[in-house]
Length: 409
Image 1 (spheres, rainbow, N blue to C red):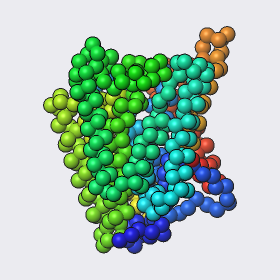
Image 2 (cartoon, one colour):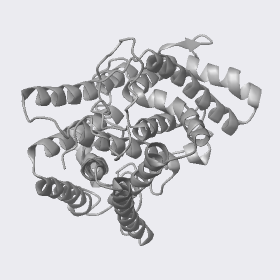
Image 3 (cartoon, helix red, strand yellow):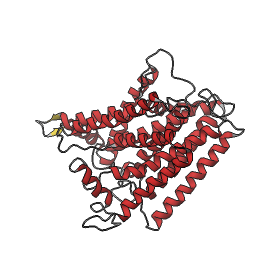
Image 4 (cartoon, rainbow, N blue to C red):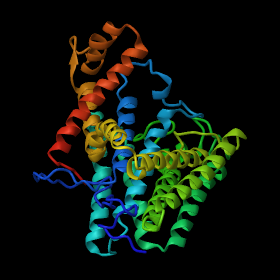
């Protein structure tokens, strides 16, 4: 049965699919309060991932506690799961936003515009970080990967029937695996997966030359084929929501399917890593890592969906759940805006403003003089420093939310 924009996503509830739930931008400065029919679990999920990005990206010094420290190469930590979770949620949002979209010129103009804006925003930020030296600035990055995965997912969703969409997913995975394990890298051979010797780093270097992180760019072109798997599986979960929401006990069908997909992907990923066939690796977005991120995304979204949009909690319990979720809903309503602002401020403080006659960046000076000298423990100081940055950005997100400023690309 077709799900309309004003059709409840859960039978008997007031929660509807909201096509504003995406990674994109538009501005509404009307005096009306924020829409009450947004899917709270989705805004909260996006907010939690941005919260994680802020904590991971805004550590003051080299001493970082384990949950916030990204793995150097093989292996996995909670920090490694944050960006994949955002991509997964991005895919989920695409499914909701395009479910009733017409395959016409305005729709494609929006998709192309959003793709270009997402790619271009961080391209400019990367140029800015390199003082506008075109010969060495980094071409790829977080928003560039979101842009490409968004574009691939939208094209597949709009142009292909369902069976062909899944074939496209298999083709993407096959291309990635063939390149990583069958491509003969000069001086390394086939299937060599080390930091300095792997097909992703080699092929990216052929394309990007000096304009990448060497030897292997964590957001390079080749690993984007695997990142598309994470994004597209989010699309599939969104499709399950819109397909089964109106049936009796629809939420049960939804959760059973979500958790089943998550369980299968978890078993595949864990088996591949445990047998050392394909180890977890975020930098090259290994296939086992992609499977695990889908599993974590499905579990993460299932828990939030049930607790925030389905469960009939006592009024007091629901009140406290909503209070606890509010800081993440604020930031999850404008995730790309807050992320972009965060990167912009980091660049200014790290590369453009110095103190002590130019010997220290303002970023380092703030950390050392305001946190490290006071707390005297590098791990604690870095953690508190990043938390205070979250408080700062969440305050901005709150002001935008209160004034119903929702920026969509």
